[in-house]
Length: 594
Image (cartoon, rainbow, N blue to C red; front, side):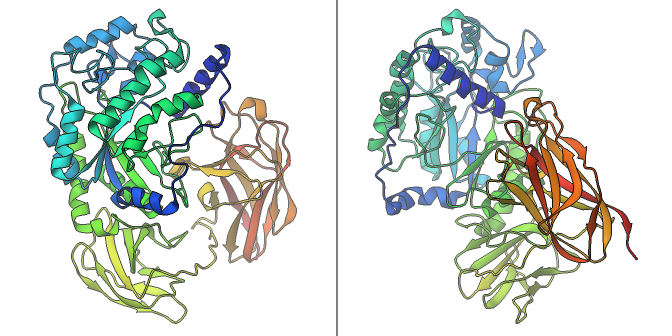
């Protein structure tokens, strides 16, 4: 989409930079941040509603909904909104889709109503995607839904009015860098049609900046969602942000380019393992696989997955911007609506544990679930109620009581002198998440006990990226869940370690789940235990790419005595760009000492 695939995002930025260099454009200097002089108090006031919202609707809708993922009768293997780029559809041929675009079933009140019933507090809708087609009545250029179609209506205006009427914040998405229709717009790689060729600076001055000005001065959106950072000069940045002063409450993300940091981080299609502590951030994600409507894409995420994503994001202090892709009639597919309404039903009963909350005070929870905080209340979102009972260690506060948020059922909360809190099981649990509100004498104060990783029932240790501690100039955690890995391991002096515990002494073999681009292969690594090198070592082999993970068996045997240990991966050499990307270190018992 805008975003689509991460490698496309990178390719677009890199390609734009190369084009800028090749065209002799001036080198980019320090750009002007429109909020550079804002105080912390001013920023906090501007961001307050957004931080409390936690849940929003993303809408990707444009001409791409007409082909719906097919070109000349065949499916195109890409996100729906990238079809023009992937299939290299000529500019004039793609523009002809406008003649078939007459979405008379589009109803802004209905869409806003769905968002509101889903518990979403704000909406961000595509005003212009990379295809270059404006979904508002632009006076800058006639390639827009009012002038180029039979529809003769302005969806952005109608959404603005409907959102205001229903008390939902409304924002717009705008592709300020890529534009596959207008001459000079970025193409994310070589142009495939001579009609696309032109001067980028002229494009910014005649299309991009004027349309952004139209959007901000006419509709006054609460959010401006840029997409695909561009190699903008300071003068171009000034043009693109010229109208910010007219809307001092405007929130803009971090994808403008030109050195402007923006207000919000925007991880796409993943939840960062630790969030972005100290920053405002928002995960944007699709309900199925694609952003724009694609008729063949029926791989819809379950309600359970969507709710767990929302809870997980809130527990890390972020917002969840969940996408819908209306079809060419302007209608959101029913499977998407059904899932949103089910989420709204859960939020109606449990929303106090999501809206206006802050991140969990715990790094690790001893149960399957997450935690959020609001004032003096600790919310425990339990995905699966533990058979051994719900127990938390290290809580320093006095506990006044606990209840199931959805039903009001009071639970027995017992606090020991050592800070351990146990909570009785409710009479019924929610199949998605049972939220327990724990009333405290103040904001949660936690002295979290050391997290020691125990072996699995079969004796194995699977030491994942999410539980690792990066030391010095070590790797950074990226991705989430099964895709979480430690990347950007570019310093040989950087190490990564885990704390484990074992009841019995034993011998272990070791293996890594790792990736390494061919031109960076050859790093030698050794396993240390409690600061001492062991005989367990190996050479990182090449995989097809940094995202292609494979198993690497290390040589030697690891001897562990009973008790707690620090297990560390130490690079001894690094001939390439980086050591590796690492998903996990697995220790497998060979035999148990008697």
